[in-house]
Length: 99
Image (cartoon, rainbow, N blue to C red):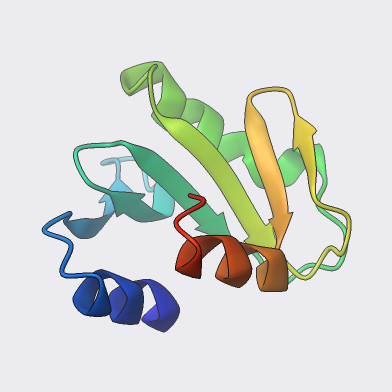
């Protein structure tokens, strides 16, 4: 999270950083811009389908949004419409404008 805050500041981006939560308690950790990107941060070393539940709910309300899970899982891959990305790969892409 702090890395995104630093990136947005240093790149002089005017994109908003927020989170999303429903009245039933479903939440997404990070939403960039006007639902341009939704990111879940997981400390797991193995991303599984259960980790994607909240992003899938978010996508129902924001169908054009890019969905990502950033985790300690070293295998960056696409699982359906959700990109699962290793945290160090995420940092590299963030600072080279790849997100």
